[in-house]
Image 1 (cartoon, rainbow over the protein chains, first blue to last red):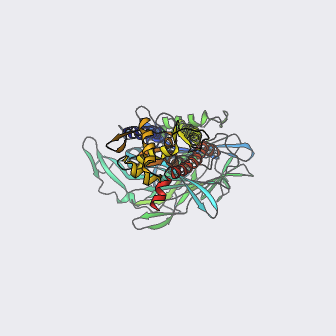
Image 2 (image 1 turned 180 degrees about the vertical axis):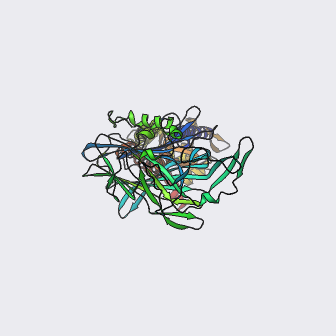
Image 3 (image 1 turned 135 degrees about the vertical axis):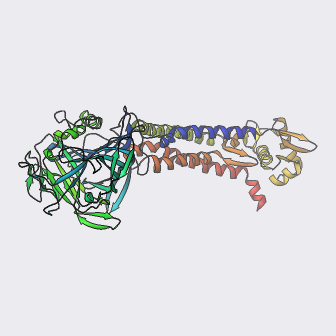
Amino acid sequence: MRKCLKRIISCLLVIITLGSLVFSGIFLEPNVLAINKGAEYESGIIEGDPLDIWYTWINTRWIQLLYASYVSDIYPPPFLSIMAQHFLGDNNTEIFFAMNFIGIEFFDDENNNSYFDMDPTSGASELRYFIFPNASFSVVPINVTKSILEYNNKTIAVYRWGFSFNSVQGCLMDNNGQLVYSENDEIIDVIVEYLIFEYELRVYQDTYLCEIKQSIEIGNITFYEYIPGVGRYPLSNSSSFYNLGLSLIFAITLASNMNLTFMSTTENRTLRDPNLTPTPVQNITLNNGTHTFLEMGFNENYTIFPENQSYRANVVAYSKDSLPSATVLQFYTKNDVYDFIGSVFKDSVVFPSEVTPDLSYNRSTFIYRIMYPMWQGRKISHDPKILVYPSAKLLSEYVSIPPGVAPMSYLFYHSIIFLTIFVGVIFFLIAVIRAKNIKRNELSPSTENISN
Amino acid sequence: MRSVVYEDLSENAFKTYVYLITRRDHCAGPREVQRALGFSSPSSALFHLNKLVERGLVREERGIYYINDIKKIGPLRNFFIIRNKLIPKDLIYFLIIFEFTIFDTFVLLNPDEIIEFLALFPLFAAMVLFLINGFHELLLRRKITKFFVMKKK
């Protein structure tokens, strides 16, 4: 009995040891040291000083996607949200495309055309104020997950991730980049309750069409008088701001080994023009004249809460020179996040050296503004989307992780495969030896004569 | 012609030993053994019990034969002996590997991918082999404890 117990205990110990070796990775935190480009998808943190970078990496063989933003345990992280993609189109066209959120503006739609007009020559503009988003009091990254959808006999891989900036603080500035003061001569400070970017990448397994849905949610915006050393006090006459229209600015960066053009299909006009005048764009395509590689579609309607009322959103492309003030945009010229994204793609074996992604705002092809003419300071929800048409596989391979499993490091994933093979082979050998033993120990009749 | 199970131990002596193992207190008298195994007389049972005493497998106290310390001899090596039950070892191994394989297949790996399927292949093969071994052991157990089945009937 004692021997039997000993054996059972030793068996259990072996099982626990092997089990812990194999399964311990499930409980590991996402990789914190470096991005693992071989992984199919993962979210993680690149530690920096003083700010860390949170990222989501997706590598679906047909498209590589990297989203990044700042996070910090110590400081309110600066406000930055950027998503970069890399894919191959027809005729070996390699495309690097990045979308960078820059800021929030308020405009006075005097001519009621639902977007703000500006005349580069005269300098006249309907833009009234903008917020240079300074920092968020807290951020909540939403780690990437994968699921598989079966729809009309089509298999769709769905990756979801997001980033929530909570209590985004910024100083209100006017059209000339000057701080705006209240009647009491105090700085006007703006707090955006939250700004949530949620993303969903759908990869259709039969056509390899990639669909990126971006969901934007803006919480209530409140205006304060900021008295340094004392605190913030709600602005008494903030209603005048709520009558203005709201606009979100995004900068588009493109790098390619071919000559490609962004076109507004609505206006049939190229957007890569330094003298671009405001061009309404409900649909933007990236093409070379014959092939379309990418399509940006902006859902026409946005919703205001709590009334749950829908209004038409206008998307207008502008020249990058239309940004409020170059001085406050220094931040978008060079920072750690850009360097990080650049380094991920620059050293990639699939990205040719002649195309170096430069994400500084100065290098952006154009900017576009999503405009919400009706706003009134309330919560807004809007869902633009991007369609990507890859036609060739990227050279890099990934190791597929089943849906529902927490992303693991590449090395660890390989170790699981290795351990599975190792454990399988060991068990198989044991089974063969056991089969021989069973035969040997069978109750077989013998011809030997043995006297009792 | 007699069958030999373990060294010079006859099949009947081995069955007597197995009978004692499967008894709750691991002990029995010659008459109980004779009845259970269907020997022609108690002296035959006594003969086999004495053989076991000679081998040091069993001790005798006032006409009752006790197992000293369960020794896994011959076919008994294929079983875990828990209390008075013979449990096929390979069925236990099969259950362990089955759990591993299920977890690996449905949670950690994706058998749709050829590399991962190949990684799982030795586990599947081992699982099948253990299952076959387990069935052999069940048949063996039936064989060495056949007398009890007949008695129950």
